[in-house]
Length: 430
Image 1: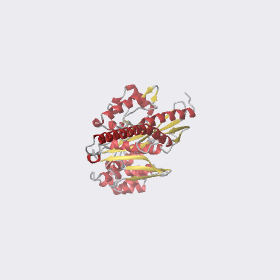
Image 2 (image 1 turned 120 degrees about the horizontal axis):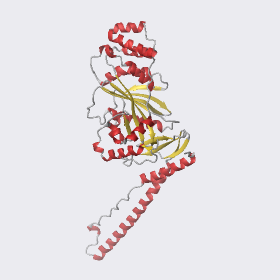
Image 3 (image 1 turned 60 degrees about the horizontal axis):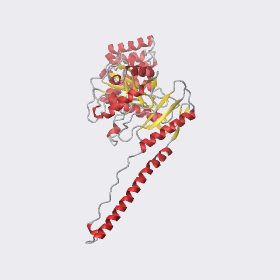
């Protein structure tokens, strides 16, 4: 159904006003009565004096109560008017909408029309104070006449009510409107929380990221050099790489960086987390993402101890950053652990932490009013298993955190055969 721009904006203004009034109105507080006059202030031995004082106190209390009630009724109107003054016009796609901005805990989302290229962006304060308990949405996510948002928000409401019972990543993430999809045919997690037809419609809507395979000649060449690494010493392998380099430029660049540290030939064990991650996967990340213009990558090795504990937890191990206007926006985040994390200082496990980081990055980009849908990429390394995730916003209040690929990470020269698959995934991600 075609909807005009002015009508869409008017509807959003009405919804924003209702939402602002609902959030800003506060229950009237009980009026605290004045304390009794002290004994020294009352005329001694005079009954009439005490009666006059009591009458004066009653009159003062009644006046104070009336004034407080009047101010309390007036306050929501003033706050609502102040909230209206904070609205700004946001252009997203072809449609111009009016939204209400917030300085903390804001949720940014968009929804697209199946009949046109127009999109709307909503900026709502979904996380007031300790967290928004109401999951009611103005615009549900529907696909093929299936209301997907309804099942998702019912699950979220239950997890908010059972806050202290949340233990799995998908349960903790959903409190912040992040919905984890690990596999289309999974038998755990979010699939058990929604109806089967809703789950099918969800995957049908979000689709899958296709990993483009290399040409057969390139795959053969990758496996050839992996086999040479397993059968040659470091000196022999370096000599071959120098005298007869591979014809595939990306493979050549990665192998040069891998041999520069000799890590694959001298790696004796899991020395520490930073060394383990950086020496094994950093050459691949640099070779792929280093060619993207206007971006820079960085590793977090030492966290700033002056920051609060909660803030420090959202620093990724690796991030690919670009500068948009006056903001730094992260395009790729990576979290890695050599084994299961059991540190007492870590509130979330790495998957939950990665989801929070991606949501923060996505919010940072959305508030800059992009001209179309955007997404961010997350990489999770647990032991020797690499998992790749994409986060998008499907509709208001629905952040989809979807796994789209995984592979094994080699740690020695003898088992470099997974390198080909890793490069395919990273190249498709770029």
